[in-house]
Amino acid sequence: MGSRFLALSRWVLIVALLVGLSGETCNAKDDGTNCTFSCGNIHNISYPFRLKHDPEHCGNARYTLSCENNITLLDLPPSGKYHVQAINYLYRTIRLVDPGLKKNNCSSMPQNFPPPLRLPYSAYDMSVYPLSTPVFYIKCSNPVNSSLYVDTAPCLNINASSLVQQKTYSYVKVGDMKVGDLNEGCSAEWVALALFDYNTSSYESIHSALMYGFDAFWLDDEEICKHKWRKYHTCYPHTIPGT
Image 1 (cartoon, one colour):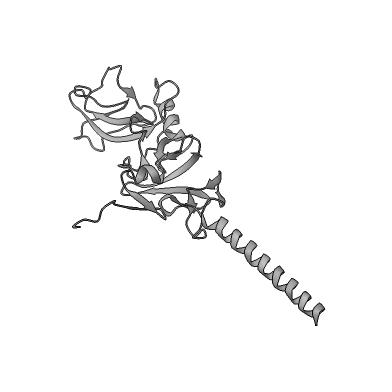
Image 2 (image 1 turned 90 degrees about the vertical axis):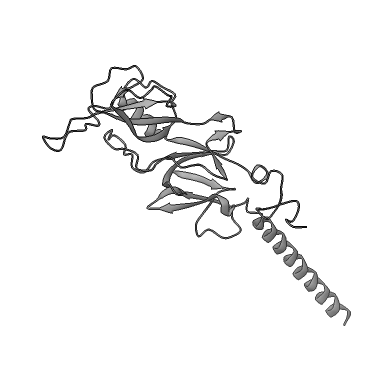
């Protein structure tokens, strides 16, 4: 009887130990930081990011990406989806490329109008330093000789579709558009974003910069919930309205 009781006690102890270890494992998963996934050329998709259809405990729903045809995508409505080129967890930046741009095809153009980046993403690092530079696509009724403008030919040629239509000329301007930057007879038709670490003397080099992509800075929950309190990735006001 004593040996049987001792054996039963040992069994109960083993079961309790296994249950305890299982509970610790579940708790480790529940914080969402121990999940890593890959899609295409992005091999380090981890907290706070997650992919659609990943286990619910992984990542933060605010930072959900998708994997389509082995391409990692970030949807930034109302602009559209962007190809994710890289994620820098140290500087909290995600590099994006417009899906309309094609490698080794300088006649391809961005199809999405730059998104009005909203929480949890920002176009500025610490709300001061702009991460990317705008590229304005300009159409002119007459040729323009300006150091501000870069001719898009032979990549982009805008030809008149009929004899009665006037031929137009295509240029891009890198950097902010200021009053007076638009020449007479010119109009800004589109704008894109890019990172520039090299010359912008030719449209081919500008297109290469566009293909490299632009950066968006992501805010962590503490910054998103500034002046509020947070629980389970949700922000709440310190006071309840009407009380």
